[in-house]
Length: 111
Image 1 (cartoon, rainbow, N blue to C red):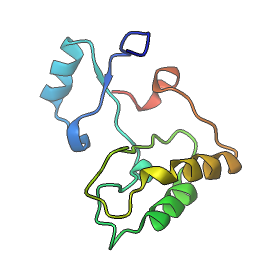
Image 2: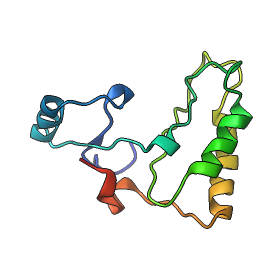
Image 3: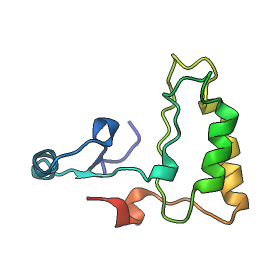
Image 4: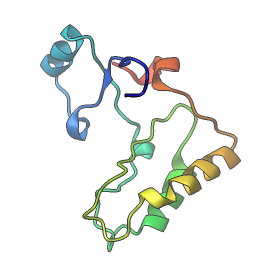
């Protein structure tokens, strides 16, 4: 649909892997691409305890060069949706001098 093939990357649900799961994925041509702790958006956490503005501020403050961000763009159960604030995260990270790359261009996090 995107006009190009798959990159052979996948992410285990919840980031939980095992040696056997990684072995099976590799046998099918896939590598696991996790996320870094600072890159965890928290978008599936309850909004009353984790307001979106605070999650955004935490990510912009904590993200450093080489981190992988994980954002779900459709957590409908969240009463204060995080996805509309993605532009603020991108802008905040660019203001810190960070730039973005495709995982296939920077493979340090891929197992």
